Image (cartoon, rainbow, N blue to C red; front, side, top):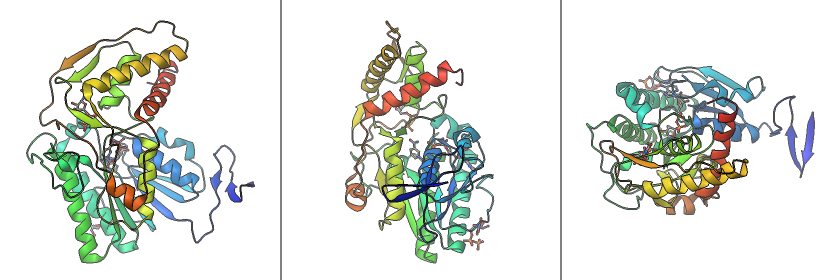
Length: 350
Ligand code: NAD
Ligand code: UDP
Ligand code: UDP
């Protein structure tokens, strides 16, 4: 049935959340590669709620069907198992190209495959954008700045990447993906957008993918020592996933065609972050009725090779071009994610 709220029309199909009812002229056919991953699944939710037709393309390497299974059967939704390394034919208006593993243990697991995904996958999706005249957005990364010598990182900074190190498959893969993207823009007039995403966290992040936020929360919830790599003086700035999704949708639908940082400007040392996460997890455990949660220890492990020493987003461009501002504090986001993992652990799902 159809219902009307504040003059916006929504359409409801039994068992699905109500999605906005868009006139045909506004409803877009949108391809989300990597749509079954952490960021992709949140983007799919938002695009579905906004009333678009969404096709997810994923090979389920690091993503899972379950992240978007709540949309299976909805008339606006389709999921295709496909590897972006191979050509793909579909008619669409917009392409959000996310497909690529993002956590260091995952992208280093098969480095050559990671490079193929970034290079051949992006080539194919740009070929598709060229043929269909779809607007193309790629999720690039702050890793294009490598271990930066400029701080914070502005989009004009060219970066400092070790092209033969263990992280190179990802960093150089994304750099060449950006090069391809602007090559297609110049040569073929493809309408492109480039988001350089900084560390992002939130529910549905694979709890065991090895990234720092999921590691720390899961370790603290299980009463295990938290593992800080090196002395913990390296820094990162963490944004909550809903802020990233706002930024990606604004970028896709705005006029800014230059690379645009989307990330938090709130910088933590990793040791400070471990301490903050420990406090937040204890607070959530108390709220969940655990009277005296165990105070976990913090231990140090070897710092991985080429681990960037400092990282913080300069977001002036996103603020000016997209009027984008993060709405979530790190504390709110970590609390939300902790509650999510807490429930998942209780239900034996993780
Ligand atoms: P993720 O690993 O959860 O999701 C990646 C998705 O891509 C998964 O569903 C995976 O199965 C799929 N995929 C991987 N290789 C594929 C292939 N060859 N063909 C088809 N599908 C493939 O990672 P995420 O955190 O959701 O990251 C999504 C995108 O955002 C990536 O492009 C990543 O580089 C970028 N990014 C993420 C962050 C972050 O902090 N999460 C930071 C910077 C950039
Ligand atoms: N491609 C694709 N889907 C399409 C159009 C192209 O996957 O709808 C792939 C195509 O197979 C090629 C790549 O995109 O590998 C680049 O296409 P383009 O047309 O730019 O180059 P060409 O095919 O001329 O090499
Ligand atoms: N890190 C850590 N403990 C962990 C996982 C990661 O101290 O259990 C550190 C890691 O060395 C890096 C930072 O946290 O300095 C962020 O790591 P992550 O893998 O999340 O992302 P990236 O290095 O790609 O920014």
